[in-house]
Length: 247
Image (tube, rainbow, N blue to C red):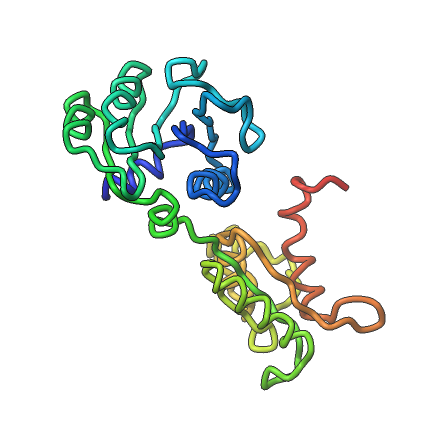
């Protein structure tokens, strides 16, 4: 595992030194992206009280909670002082963004047992090391050849999501065998986790559905409701979703 991947996978709290309140600045874009992906962002900017909905602190030493990684958007000559602060607060890593290079400060951080990344963008590395959203797009239109309005609209959405960096897998239910569970309990007793019947729901689609960050349901409407394949799919998965829904 690379240092970049180790930091991104083991860290949850990121102090961003030099975080700008301006949306068009790289620091703002990177921090906003990281926040959207589950990281706790702590702005470090002495000229601001709040950035991205989080209280801003004048320096690392004034942050009242533990910090996993210090992400630096400052000039290279300012890095030594920031590294010293990072060491004092017990940070686990220092990340110098693209164009921020200071070999002496990097050596000092490593000597203090901090992980160090230099001259690399955290946004780009997060995309590389598992930051891509996994999307499962399910099409229940029975018309082949991609000519149905349902499939055309879904394809436009899928294209846009792929351009945005998402990993999208498209599943056409017309090519699958999906049945209602008959309650034979074979998958719970004799063949754990595997359905002995010809049911792609249990043997293929359930695992994909569970591993996805987002599921897109594309279905034509008949008599003001979804068609039979989609209805079956939704009713097979809904019991798993129900505990997380506010009904």
